[in-house]
Amino acid sequence: MIQRASARAFCLATAVLLGACAQQAPPIPDTPSPLAWQQHRDTLETISGFTLRGRINDANQGRTADLRWIQLGDGDFTLQLNGPFGIGAVEIEGSAAGVSVRTRDGTQYLSDPEAWMQANLGWSIPIRDLRHWTLGLPAPGPLDNLSVDTEGQLQGLRQNGWDIRYDSYQTVGQLQLPRKLEARTDQARLRLLIDQWEHLELGPNRRS
Image (cartoon, rainbow, N blue to C red; front, side):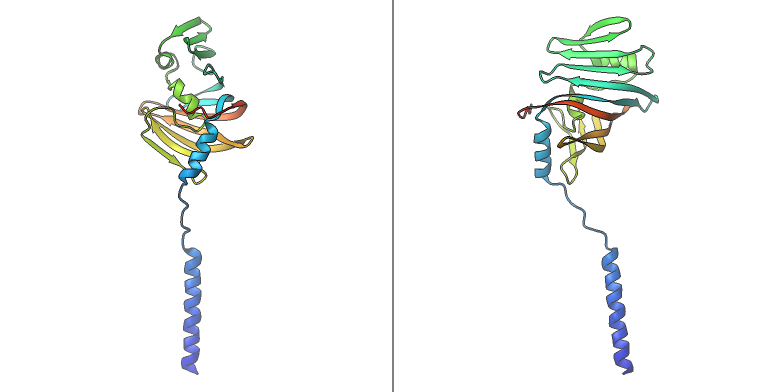
């Protein structure tokens, strides 16, 4: 009887121990689905135009500006910045004809708007690429690295010397679009918080 009781106790203790181990075992992580990313990317690439409102922060200098980006379906865009840069509000417009910058001192027509931004704002970012990065897409051209989550949403990429990290997304209609992202190089660290997406223009896939 004593041996049987001891055996029962041993079996019970073993079962409890195994059950506890099973409960404490870490879950097997999900792996990103290439199909999920392809479907998400294809949907985003139907967006030909949009308006976004938010804030951009220069982490190196501790300065924040209000931002409004208007992207038209024909490729024209307007980027408006209003913040503590010492030059007042800035409006950058781009079209097939070129890029212009309007400040309180007048309008300049530029071949290199990024160089102007660096000289006058203390930072710059590839404007043509930003149109894609803000949507959660890589820009056309070579891509060094890309990572997505289990839902197919872009989590990070490295392209044209920039590391882009996506911290959160927001629901816009039937879409999931970025809310917080960070863009950095060895010299720059910019954070973009998108408060509102408006006027989404949808059409056929416009993959470049």
